[in-house]
Amino acid sequence: MFSTHAGAGEAALFGLYGVGATLRGFARSLSNVHAKLKRVAASDITYAVLLVSGLVILIAFGRLTMFHAAAVFVLSVIVSFLPFGPAYARELALAVKARNLKRYLPMWRDVTRWSLLGVVLTELTVNAHAYFVTFISGPKAFGLLALGALFMRPASLVLSALPDIDQPVMTRHLAHGDVKGAVRVVNEFRTASGAVLIGTIALSVVLVTWFPHLFLKKGYDETDVLAVLALWIAITIARVIRTPEAVFLQATGSYSALARVSAWSSVTSLVVTFVLLCTLGPIASLGGVFAGEIAIMVGIFPLARAWRRQHA
Image 1 (tube, rainbow, N blue to C red):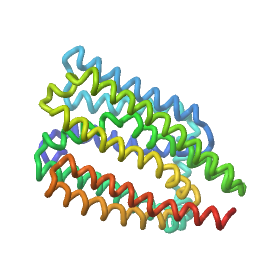
Image 2 (tube, rainbow, N blue to C red; image 1 turned 135 degrees about the vertical axis):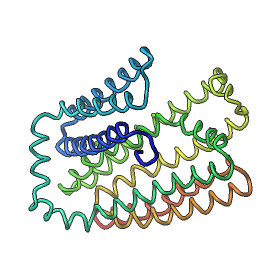
Image 3 (cartoon, one colour; image 1 turned 60 degrees about the vertical axis):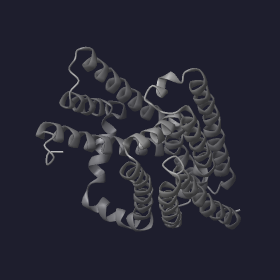
Image 4 (spheres, helix red, strand yellow; image 1 turned 180 degrees about the vertical axis):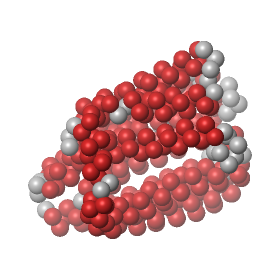
């Protein structure tokens, strides 16, 4: 940000926010592992309330600038540490000691590097789709696709939030040899996310049917919006089906296998997206995202079944 003349103060504040968000992510994971879910909820609520109210106040007083917004982000993330208590600070201090970093090396080799590779491949696929559409068809075309993603936002939030809680629970069941208990959590995960998806679809249909002026005023054709919505519903259904299985495999420690699946699905998604974009246009390019989701399902379900047969 500083090199692009966004301002030294803004760059420093967003850098500080990045540090705080990373440490809060660690605190959330640590609390979830120890089943201290109320601390996580309190931190999330504190962060959300401060961030939204702070930005609203800036808007109300006409002071919404990049610098002031960044300051609100930093303040919100700092205060959100309070629910974790002083114990978190002590555990963080212990974690960065040399002997603990040395003990972490096997974890890096067996788990973290593969998890990191999977995240990089997933983000590469998502960002590449955005760049493909924007550079080839223009930002307005990508805006329509982003509108469809916005409709599915509630279900997407649930799919990203539930693993924070359910993966540690699955891991505890597996550590005690309770495979059935872990599978039960997988089914509960899928049921909960499916219920939210049904509600999300219903809300989207209501918006499109009775309140189209909320988004059609931006110049989007109603038929195009319906096509994008249908494709995003298909993509989200695929994610609801495969995400619980993927989280189960993470709980079993199958990170290297998941990274290979991510690599295969990433290539599939990028190739199909590019071909559809060049031949049928930006809306059809979402078929590449859907193809990537199908590739993930084809990869992970046999892995999950094989693990269960082996450990039944």
